[in-house]
Image (cartoon, rainbow, N blue to C red):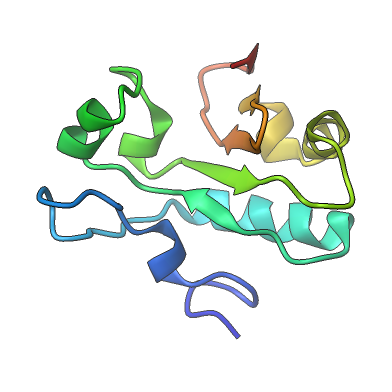
Length: 124
């Protein structure tokens, strides 16, 4: 049992910067709700590689100046061994908050976010 939802804990979303914000962990509730739907549809645990990033950490990793991670609206999900990134992205499209938000495909992870200013899709 998680402390944010049935399967997710705040620590999974904490900033991973070394000397910046002290591992702050704000999380947008719509993101957690959408991740629960995604997890249920995928039928297995999902692991968060990156959740919230403070501005200093975002700069350190070369994140976009408008990264949804800084607004606690995004998560990077580690590739599920039994699925391709493309299959994960298709499944993410079936989650309304992600379909209306952002989905980015990378070699080893899938970025999802709950932006409200229109959908965005990319391959990194």
